[in-house]
Length: 514
Image (cartoon, rainbow, N blue to C red; front, side):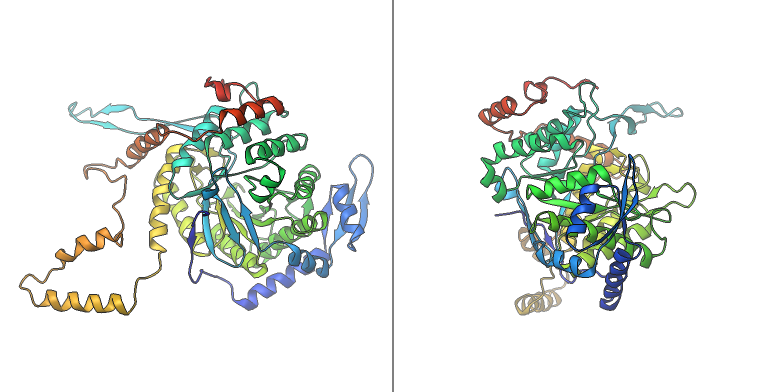
């Protein structure tokens, strides 16, 4: 059986049905006027051969084309895109079934940050009273390594609410190059978690090596087709409205192989998209639809996800502001648009602006986690451990986030109200009112056994101070001590024999050099 996720009944929607239609029609107008600029020759040729209006804009060493996509081409692509996308896993019980018509949410990590945040807890003594000692977390940022990625996947394997794994850190070891990065990051992930693994691709030349690795692990080509244990993220459209040359090539080749792929767009309201909600929504929807259309023209029936990563610009320095209220609004709207097209939605939450854990990061990430979850996207990524607008990853923070998602999942349980419950409650009320104490204490144990009562916060301190982060760090160490179901030795040996570029220390237990 696949993972259950959380089914959101009556998902939160900001837009009316008429407003959704207005956004759709505005996006269709954008795709024909002004259209998109393509820096990718193959994309321009594919669109031209399928009835789009394609006009050369510039020639020479860096040619570009203006692509105007008619609505009928988009609608035909939406008809051929699968409504249900399966994301498989090494352990079939960890497979995810994404239904574009069902607001069942799966929680997933992300994204490939450059910075790994170590945490230490030095002891400090109070000057006025040396008997009083406290531990305060200190954070040390550094470049991520293969060992960090293995450690992250190991912990995420054991996080209860986490349903799928997107590589959390960019591996930057001295012996990692463009030619071996992809195979090592996919192997590190697949070897340390039995959940679904998704990632971007650094070099198109490594696509077949990564796919062959997945085939070996899955048991063959047909087995990988039935159980796609890996999938890909592609940001083929650069906002505003531009097909990128290299990423579009990657997207085309992934589609040819029929593996699940995310069409991801990440405009920044105020710089690369209009600031107001109507404008950014019309643009991001047009960009995603253009990518979906290209994918279906390349290979009809390719499993695609409607990938939305919109963000608002900060007004002081024009950096991303994931903690802004508007960022959550845009993601809620995108969830609604994806549901309108019946395409599974890859959405974004749990990202914040501060670079270290604390009060602001907790408020911002919880605000978006709750609201975006309530909107019912099928694949909610970035939701664990991310800080400073997706540039920093902290494993202890990911453990904290798991506890918070447990609370969100409990909150979203359907109400237990029916005739039986009402009758039992009336009986309790009458019995209690007939006693001198008038207390319901004797009924608590039964409710606890039935798991109708939420558990206490797992990182609750002693009441004398805030020990939440220290307790979460202790829990992280406990998870690291748990065993991992690695790829079996025979399969690993075959992978290392057939896939070039893999670092032997991944299986020899050697530490990674940063």
